[in-house]
Amino acid sequence: MDIVEYLFSLGFNPVKIRNADHWYLSPLRSEKTASFKVNRKLNVWYDHGLGKGGNLVDFGILYHNCSVSDFLEKLNDLSFHQQSLKIIAAHEKHPEPQIKIVSKKNLFSLSLLRYLKHRRIAENVARDHCREVIFELNNKAYSAIGFRNNEGGFELRNPWFKGSSFPKSFTSLCNDAKEVSVFEGFFDFLSYQTIHQNQASFSPDFLILNSTSFFEKSRSFMEQYDSIRLYLDRDNTGQNCTQKAMESSHKHNDESSLYKGYKDLNEWMQHIGKSQKKGLRQSLK
Image (cartoon, rainbow, N blue to C red; front, side, top):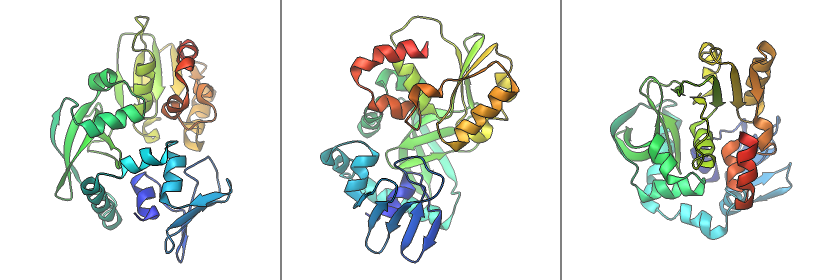
């Protein structure tokens, strides 16, 4: 599989292209200047910041933090793999293809449940908050984990696809609390719920932005609370939103230091050991 196409399926686009060389902000770490190069002719990559490179498998085991066999398992469904390439080609021709929701049902697909397990999301938590959605894209049908927003649209995720249906908006879940926990993406919210699933303690209200573009638009919703806990990504965009919010009101609290060294809460949870979960629960209280 072409590495450029695979990176596109993960949501990464080149910052610049020079002949066969495609330059990216590294998917493997945080950086401001693109130093991750893919030579499309040779189909190899090299991260100048890490001093590492190789083929698609070499990248996959680093990116997913898994074994060779685990990564190859992600690629073993050839028919789905071919469908994914069609999605990529469609995106290149039409930057914003129309997604049509065909049906919604309880989570059942084994491939989607395996994907949730890989990201360490408890199955019962996912079933409580998500649906299995069949959607059409460029006259082809696909299945994905669907997370509903306040306007009736869905965030859609599977191992090969990341997108959303119209209308796109944020998601709020209210428990009549005086405190709200804010997450950038729904997998971070599901991670929080997985960590706390066996606790019968107080539950705050929740706001899942589904995109940082909704941060300012949801400020009026957040400001009605006495305390606002921000669990945004530790990238430039997420940290800028957090900083601006904290400067505007003392009610905002930056909780992202809990997963320092990782992109977001879900990535952190995927890497921590079982023995650390208890300490994690204490930290998130």
